[in-house]
Structure formats: C-alpha cells, structure tokens
Length: 109
Image 1 (cartoon, rainbow, N blue to C red):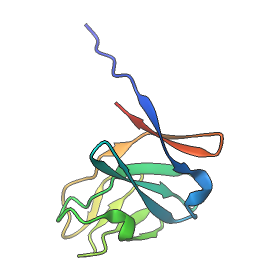
Image 2: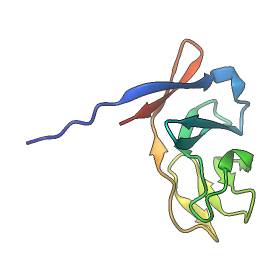
Image 3: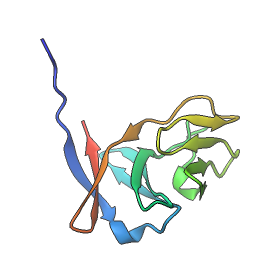
C-alpha cells in the first residue's frame, strides 16, 4: 500500500517583499519558517529557527545560498537545509515553495 501526502499551499508573503539574497520570517500555526530569495531569483523555505539554539534565522546574513545564524554564525545551505558550519550540526527541514500571482506559497504536508 502506498501512502500519499497531500501538500496544502499557504500564502507566505508577496514575492517582491523579499530582495535577492535576503530572507523573511513567516509564522504560521505555531511554527516559524524562513523564506529566501536566491541570487538566481529562486525562492526557498526552511524551518525558521537555527538548530543550534533556536535563534530566528530571518535575522541572519544571506550570501551565496547560505544563511548564517546571527548568534553564533552557524551556517546552512538554504536550498538543501544542510548544516555547513559549526556550531550547527543538525540540518534544517526544507519546504516546497511556488509562486502564484506575485505571491510566495509555502507547501505544507
């Protein structure tokens, strides 16, 4: 038997609310997400809190597909969620994103 997980799409923000190489915070249903716009004009989403000490990543620095936590400078590749620099060693969860009519939609299971 195969189990299929449906994705529901939640409007996170306007696409033009995020500059290239920037991140915004989006809170929904008791969870914090981080929405990114890459230098290639693509959009990505991860959990919004650093896996090291639960600091909001939207306050961090974005550069070359990397988000740097503002507290201890731990780094993640926001495209994959992979932890890239100490002190972080636990990856971020990533989420599907799509654009619709100038809005950024976040896919949740």
